[in-house]
Length: 492
Image: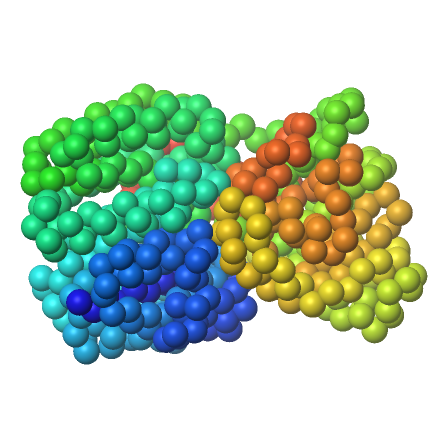
C-alpha cells in the first residue's frame, strides 16, 4: 500500500493585518518530501501518528508537504495554491489512502473554506479514496469538509495536548474501513453559537463536561469518534462557531442522535461562553495584592496564536505605570528593536521605541510604540525545541531574539511571531520563569500547557489588539446570522 501523509495548517484571523504569505509558512516550518517526514516523525503531532500507522501497516509513505504558519490574516492565493497543488499532485500519482493533518479554520484570498476546498479537489481526483482528517479544536467545520472525507476528528483538549492521540484514532478508523472492519458514517450539527476563546478551556466548565460527553459517547463500540469543536470566532466566514461531528460504524441514525444530544447540552450552556470585559487598572490593583508567585498576567487581546500583531504595548505600559516589579514578558514582536539591540551589543544601555509598529484598521487601532530605556541583557538566534506537552519535539524559530531589561521588567523581543505555550520561550534566553513574580504572556489558553505547573494564579488583562474580546469592534460580513451572542432571540 501507499499512503499520502500531509499537513496544511493555519488559523486565519480575517481581522488581522499580518500578511500570511509563503514566507510566513517558511518561518514556522514548511517542508516538502522527505524533509516533511523528518521534521515531524517522532513528535507529538497528528502527522507523526499517521507515519506510525503507515509503518505498522508496512505501507509506503509519501509526504508531499508539512506546512504550518502562526495565525494571521488570510492566506495569499500563491501560498494556498502551492500547498494544495503539492498534496493534489501526490494524490494524482496514485495512492491507497490520504491521511491529513489540517486545522479547520483556514481562509485564503480565494476561498473562505481552505480545508473544504482542498478535500473537494482530492475527491475529484479519486472519488472513492479513503481520507482521514484531523482538525484543531478551533475548527470551523463546514459541510464540504465532511462530504469529502471518510472520517474526521478534532482535538479534545485546549491547550492541545492530545494531537498525536486523535491522529492515531482517526487514522485507525480509516485503515479499519479499508480492511473491511468498519463502515464509518458521519453526522455534523452546527450550532448558532460563537463561543469566546477564553471560555473554551477544556479544563474549565462548561467545556470540560461537554468534552466528557464526547468521551462517554465513544465508550459505545459502535461510536468511532465524537468531537465538539469550539470553533474560531475571529474567522469571518459563514461556518465560524461551535459544531459537533460524530462518526459511527454504519449507523447514521445513531450518529445524528448523539450529535444532537451533545449540541443540545452545549446550547444550554451558551451563556457561559460569553467573556466579560474588565478594567486594566482593577486587574493590576488585584495583582499587587497577591502574595503567591508567579502570577500570570494574560495579555490575551494581542495573542499572535489567534492572529494578533504581538506588538501592542497597552498592557506593558500599564505594568510600567503601576510600577510592578520582577516581571518577565513573552513576547513582543519587533524585528527593528532586535536589530538596534544587536548593534548595541550585550550589556549596552539603549533607548528604544518598542512595539507599536503595526496599524490595525479592522478595529480602527493605530500603532502606539512605547519609548523605553534599559539594558540589552541577552541576544540569541531564537532557536529551541519544545519539551512540554504541546508540540512536543517541534523546533521553534523565533528569529533573532533579545532580552531587554528595564530594571523591573525583562522583555523577550522576537523577530518572528510565537505564542508562549512552553516555558522554553523564557529558558532559551536564560530567564527562569518560576523565579519571577509576574509573567506577562501574550496568549489565551495555550500558555497552560507549559506554565500551569508553575503558576499560582492567572489574571486576564483586557488590553487592545485584533484578538479583541469585544464583539462590537468586529465587522462581520460573511458570518451566518442570526448567531448568539451577536444577535437576540436566537433559537436552536
